Length: 148
Image: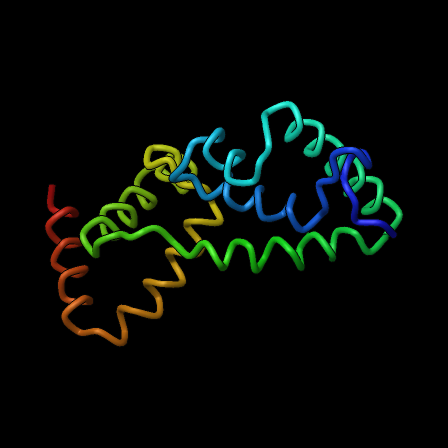
């Protein structure tokens, strides 16, 4: 199965589609900036998005291998982006906001996509147990914010 893009004149392979998709969902740059880094314009990106969305949907309906190939390209593309810098105080504020308003509202308010949140959660889940000073800052902030 070919992993070539919408037309032979303007190939956008599946791996490039996955990288651009990961960058767009991560935020931190405008759509135009992300597309520009990949020498794409909005029209070409839209054609590629429609093309790959249809191919992925058709492939999933037929239990084909394309979704697995896409996930295999998207996962490392997301991982390569890492997570944005966030202080323990900001992480505490996000944690409380999620508890109060729900994940969707809290992430939307900060312009964060779910995959970015999952990378942040992983980072903090690993960092807090290893770094007592960081954990203390987080705990103090969580307590202070919770008392408001």
